[in-house]
Length: 104
Image 1 (cartoon, helix red, strand yellow):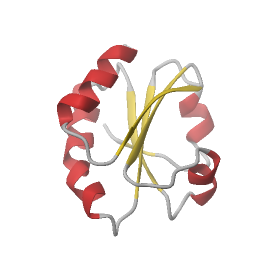
Image 2 (tube, rainbow, N blue to C red):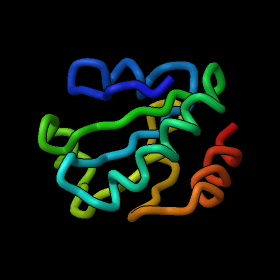
Image 3 (cartoon, rainbow, N blue to C red):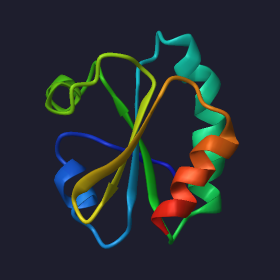
């Protein structure tokens, strides 16, 4: 299940046992909306193996600034609390899945 990532839950998710994929997005972003069903599908597929969530850059400006998010969508991949990979722009499902597989 896809998680809504906020400033309040980010640290615990980032430092959790499972790897984390954060999709930085905004409601007004066309490519972000195109990517949304892919992220939702991957969240179901990898439930229990990886945490996959979305972070609205308008609601969590400080998180977007902390990670230097300038373009959306941007996906950051975390393992053991550290950013280990990144994808920028609307990506095909296969590209995202390849990054997920590399983390598991």
